[in-house]
Image: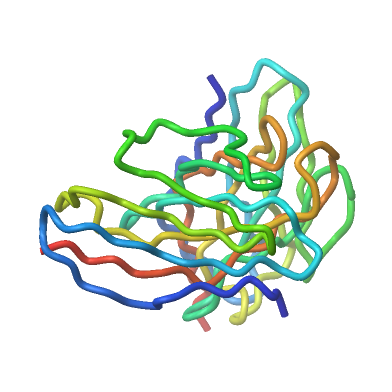
Length: 115
Length: 108
């Protein structure tokens, strides 16, 4: 059983508000990535953090931002929420940003509904 | 740009019948392909990766660079195989691009 945990599991926000989603990576994993999965779609890469630094970003606007802490846990922040931000947000962790062959483990996700 | 295409959103087969879930990719570098599975009310989990060349739960997938495909196959479907299946390509370091997914339903 993977050790990636996310909170909250579900939340509802109003358009224009801000949201913070949290992720605890699997023990020993120093790389955390965030994905957005809209209904009926595959997950889309938002950004990745490695040793507290952003290490790549997908096609998402600057109002999507993140942090990684010294214990490798991470936050995803979304400002000025829009209706289209409604999705499942997945956190994924792995053991290193520079090596091949390491398995990427996913959390159960946080369901965000924007009304 | 890297892209993964799963042409079938839905696939329904009878128990005991062969299953093939299609995946095609576009990537300028050396590809590393995966299949992830999501059972009902469970998290996304790795099913298999092409570099391992292994069979998991009876599923196999062969990377065909000429056809840029990584189709997932199983000779005899079981009811517990019903799930969402996602093909994914690793790009950069530990980053994945996913296909849209195929919902596989195994009928009794």
